[in-house]
Length: 427
Ligand SMILES: *[C@@H]1O[C@H](CO)[C@@H](O)[C@H](O)[C@H]1NC(C)=O
Ligand SMILES: *[C@@H]1O[C@H](CO)[C@@H](O)[C@H](O)[C@H]1NC(C)=O
Ligand SMILES: *[C@@H]1O[C@H](CO)[C@@H](O)[C@H](O)[C@H]1NC(C)=O
Ligand SMILES: *[C@@H]1O[C@H](CO)[C@@H](O)[C@H](O)[C@H]1NC(C)=O
Ligand SMILES: *[C@@H]1O[C@H](CO)[C@@H](O)[C@H](O)[C@H]1NC(C)=O
Image (cartoon, rainbow, N blue to C red; front, side, top):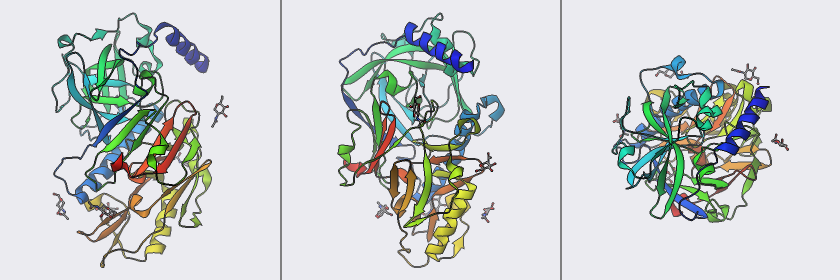
């Protein structure tokens, strides 16, 4: 019955509120710069890895809350850490007001803080004021858009939308406005004009959702695929988000054949099927059932753009930790207070021993990552740490650190995730 209702709602929405057309000729593709939330910060690498570790943990609460549909009220914690890793710059309105927002492949809505605010969070750029823009248009209260399934679970007041992200949330009115990406590309988008925002969005104005569903940026721009390429953790070069025809693995030019794995049928997250993990040539003895997808139990494997460091169910993490320890033969040292990571080794002579590639065996595809994508070596403090976190549930998240220098394409038509090694700074 619930499924039928959902389907009916979707059909209804599809018929009655088709999205506004692009105002300018639609480009076939776009390339946008991604800025890491710690870019330009005074933090050293040790401090940055620790901050990323903390964010990953808070991000986990966000994803878990979304999966289990916990409302923000149940999770109201006074400290609101950042739960996103990258932000994109764009402009909104006429005349254009430059703003930035955090990128989230784990959610759908595009929203930005709007004046007048009942409750706004700190934002570096001026807050957008719809009354100063000639292209702003409020979506009328009678629009079925307000009954969109996405908002219903959060019980917004009449004629408002609401969305929660774990302990963070947004509430306001739905509107359309001209969004400009780069200097040439503009589009009329439906967005959340947030009058009440809670949480920490890294000083940006809100969130750009790249998830599935018709309100996400990618759906509204009518692109059938997008990709990102994250430069290495210790690089000062910016990362990239590519939309449409630009999301093309030919750009990777690594010489390695791209690999592809199908997305599972889940409308909330981009789940993929992970079968197992190898270290070097050794297939690790992790029961594959640990990674098995079952949305109702919050089980499965998600590739995420907003999580800094991968998270694995404790039993899987323990097997990896044990294997790495037997490879390295260095003293284990607890450095959780310095680097925020669970498993580190004391390195007395530099460079530390080499570790082999790690392979994530997905359905039909192997993702091979060099040790620099799963270990963090810090000469100044003489440490080598595993950049993964054990979790007490069965949601496995493949995070950014593991995706450094890899071009990752989300093909929404073919419903598959493709990837290949790349030099992301050359994009
Ligand atoms: C970044 O890390 C890689 C691998 O650990 C290393 O080869 C490179 O020299 C580092 N670059 C900087 C700028 O620290
Ligand atoms: C997803 O659903 C489609 C159609 O219902 C089906 O053909 C396909 O096999 C499913 N894919 C997976 C991975 O379950
Ligand atoms: C590492 O130290 C922290 C305190 O800094 C402690 O909470 C944690 O349990 C320790 N971890 C291990 C594996 O001993
Ligand atoms: C990095 O920054 C932290 C916090 O400011 C400081 O305590 C630490 O000594 C620094 N580490 C190095 C290796 O410079
Ligand atoms: C995780 O999955 C295992 C079986 O693979 C199960 O025994 C365990 O209860 C699950 N944990 C949670 C928190 O659901």
